[in-house]
Length: 99
Image 1 (cartoon, rainbow, N blue to C red):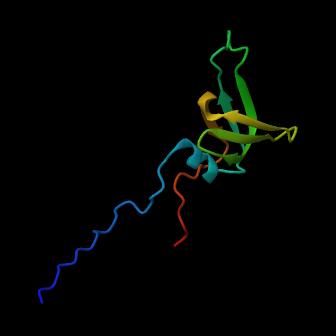
Image 2 (cartoon, rainbow, N blue to C red):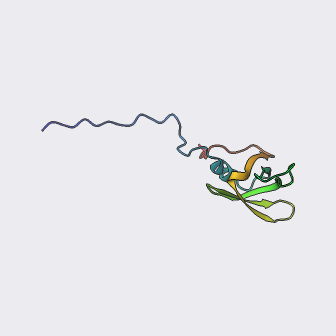
Image 3 (cartoon, rainbow, N blue to C red):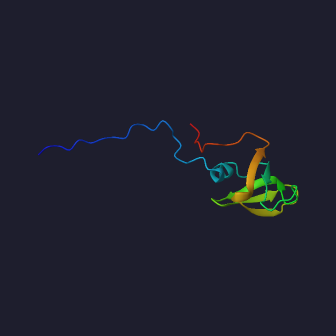
């Protein structure tokens, strides 16, 4: 009986399989202090823009939950309004395990 050849997958040069979506990066930096910037479509001269000095508590595909570091107030923002974030320390980008 002829043997069927078997093929193995070549080693993956990229050990990370998780894609670098913004919500994944926010989750990897959960709890780190930062400044988060949001702008809204109906903003007039920046009146409805929001800057939060806080930390990510949770992030999903379409939302982020932030905790204000000064007041402990929580915010739920739709990701469509997220502009960018600045962190006070080095950011985690890959979910790496220690070697």
